[in-house]
Length: 424
Image (cartoon, rainbow, N blue to C red; front, side, top):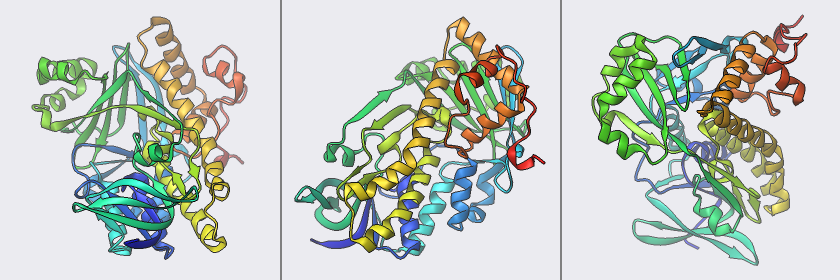
């Protein structure tokens, strides 16, 4: 073997970078391999939910996010395209100190984590390192082969972590059966100057139409617009003026902002897919993040759940080292801890895809009715909020009764019930 470490992490994305940092802080010898030539670039806004904020706080990084790249947002308003307000979500209902969402400029959180990783483990992050294969002995993974600067290196490790995304090569090499699904809708995202100075998030829902607008630092706005998958060529051919008109028709208050969208360099295409791995663990290997459980962005938890995976796994690794046991059975503790909440969020996101993305008039009517009912039901609204915030492991709708109450078909005697932390 060319190199020996305790843990090798394939992929320095949201989960892999956090895992590398958490392990380094525990004094565990780790190496993170990233095929990209350097830190991420490009357009990608992000909403850092309360569970993600809590993790960054645990890592000592929350207060180190750059002030000029982060904007706290308390209120999210859901509106009907061509109609009025449907529902407003108030993050201030959550217990402090994480009682707001943080909308960030592209890669602000990721770059902060990568910087801390380089500081804590200067030799523990390799860019331009492409995973080739796992190494095995008697059916147990004992390391990886990676191509670095044109050379094939053999890296021995006690644990190999596949944090290499939705189309994970590590997962494929391990032979883990996985259901992959590509959604019919994807997203166009952009960061635009906002002369109108948007202060609260606005989310517009129509018939097969969604436009999200989230205030970011420096009087800019993070825009998310749902489009049909594989439709970017047609959208480009129609020109930026067509999008300017469409967005202005949806939200005239921000027409000046939309007029500032003048070229395609201001936007990026974000496909949406889902992965459901049959298992996340093997002898000597685990999966985390999108490699194990990619989910639709409607959940607003994809990157957050990868971060939670990383912290959970980082808590398991020391005992595995102490017991000299990285068997599938021992590593299953990590999957058992994490899978219930991930499964719930994947199901919730798919329900939202069904109701939010629809063009069916009856389903649109039901969707809008549910939003309006939840807006008047403090109990259900809080349950939905805590799911989006990553602060609950069970569905926001507990059983059929909650669903009937959410649809307004059955009265809820507990509708005005305050959140648990403010009850007397």
